[in-house]
Every structure is written in C-alpha cells, then in structure tokens.
Length: 410
Image (cartoon, rainbow, N blue to C red; front, side, top):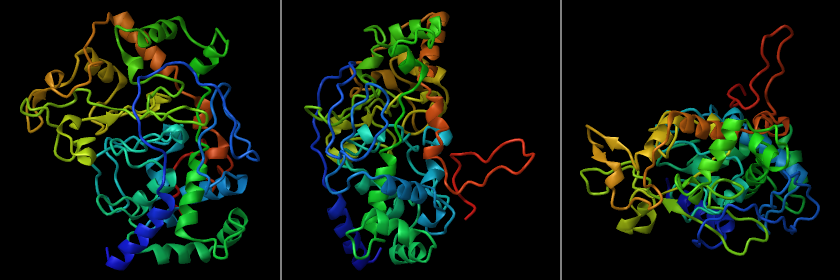
C-alpha cells in the first residue's frame, strides 16, 4: 500500500473511528428497558422488549440510507475483482455468517478466523472476535474493503476505481444524493461506510420460538426446550454468565444503558505444550492488549440463530452444537496430537466459568432443543434484508433464488 493511500485511509478512519468507551461488568440476564432515541424520525420496528440501538450522531438513520446500504452490502463491485460482496461471507440464510470454518476472501486467501454473525450487531460495542478497539460499524467496514492481512474484498489501492464504478451506475448517484443531501459530492468512501453501517444496524433478530415463549406464547417451546432453558440459565452449566441478556452475549450496548459491557473469555480450546498458548495466528485479545493473561480470550458471540451458524468457535474448529456442549462439559478441549496438542481444561488463562459438568443423554438433548429454539426463521427470510439484485425464480422453477446468496452475477 502506498504512503499516499495509507494516509488517505487514515483520514477516513479518523472521520468514522470515534466510539464508545470500553468497560467491563458482571453479566445480567434481564431484558433491558426500551429507551428513547436521538433519531426520532426513523421507525426501527424492534421486537417487543428490545432497546433502541445506539446510532452515531454523525450518521443518523434514514430509510433511504438503509436501502442504499443494503444495495452496497450485496454489490460485488465492492470487491477489487468484482466477485465478492459483504454478503459472500455474511449470508442471510446463515444469520449473516457463512458455513466455512475460516473466512475465504475474494482472492482465495483463507483467514485465521471465521465470519461472525451480523445478527443484532447494532448492539455490539466490540465488533470482532478479539479487537476491543473496533467499536463502530463505519470504522469496521473499512477492514474488509481495504485490509491486506488478510485480503477480504481486496480494494486496497483501488478506492478511486471503486468510486468510479459507483458514479457510473444508473442508480447510485441518485441514491447517494438522496441519502446525503447536504454533501456536494455524496459518493465517497465515508458515505459508503455510513450507508453500510445503517443497513447493518437493521439486522435485528428477536422473533425466535424462545422470544415468543417469553412474550407469553406457552406453545412456542417444546417441553424439552423448556428444560434446556432451565439448564442454560442455571449455575451448574454456567452458560448464561457469558451468553446472558436479551442478546445472549454480555458484550452489549444500547440507548439508555448506563455502561458499556465488553467481555472476552478463554474457553480452554487450546493449551499448547501446557503453557496456555493458542496457535500463533489466533492469540486472541493478547494480540491487541499485549497482556500475557489475555492469551486465548475471544468475544462470546450472540447465540441467537446459533443453530444455523456452524461450525463454531473463532476458528471454526468445532463442527456441531453437540460437540460444543461436549467441549464445555469437559471443561476444555483436549487435542491429542499435532502442533496444537494440549489439554485445554488445564489452560491457566481459562475462564472460571468453564468448569465442566455432567449431563445425561436426555439433558444434552434438552439443551440442544433450547439452542435450536433461538432460531428466528422470520429474520432468516425477511425480504427487507435480502439481496436486492436477486433474480426472480423462472416460471416452473423448483426454487426461488436464495435471498441471502452473494450477488456474484453482476
């Protein structure tokens, strides 16, 4: 990357990079109270009981900006070789994650970590697996666009080319002008990130069978799922300590919240040579803090729609939810051979909540039933979040085009 290009991107980051302060706090499981928003003219359509997301003052929500962001999110012209879009790694049918253990960028480069779900990302004050400094969606959007280690969308050094593509489109000049009416030159990198962030803040999921049960529909959960919920929120399994609250993660923020919660945990996934180390390409929070005690600490992601986001963990090394439960039941994972060999339950940096437990076969099935009850089918098929470039199904076709598929055909 040239020095001029680096300085130019640094200026963009400075424009979009301010955010809320990081803090830590004990988890809670109570649903928060809804609070007023500073953006009174935008209708959020939030699930009952959900609070309003925080919105940066310099990027207020609007219907036009959200729709512009949706088009950009699915547009392959936002990659250097015009083969990938944001939706290539964040697919609606998979709660805006993908099915790969580790992400693969537009050039074929395999990433060290898997794609995180974007469901309810509007409530997250820390946006990646282990970087506490990535706080704003506007700031984060620059990473997949221009990052070089790893390459995701592959736009490094091609920002002028990207802007030219959008300026030459039949629709974008009007859509940008309507979304940013006070800007003399509205098609800009800053406004691209603002529109993408506005759309991402609308990816809100809160209509699962568990939610409907919590709202009074006693038929929404099976007896097994109810028993699984009791185990999940109990002190024996400890699950809720890291996956509590309305979003099933304790890293959360919203309008009216008194303090921001950001938490990272070592779950005993690795313990190389008995030293507590993780593989060199994934040291977790330690990579950013420099503190040896932060080795292997990653953000606990939301569990909403968790049944459709396999494989699991930051590196996709656990294939199924049943294997996830087995990992926590053992108090950590044992890797018997190879470069990552070690007994994870003995990792000296492991969270005190990962102590291990014993379940009967029926109790395991109950816990799985509860985790599956967190799937919000309406969110996974909401046409307001779907690919606007998807072609309608041909007459007589067995299936319509997948609503969340990446738009590789432009």
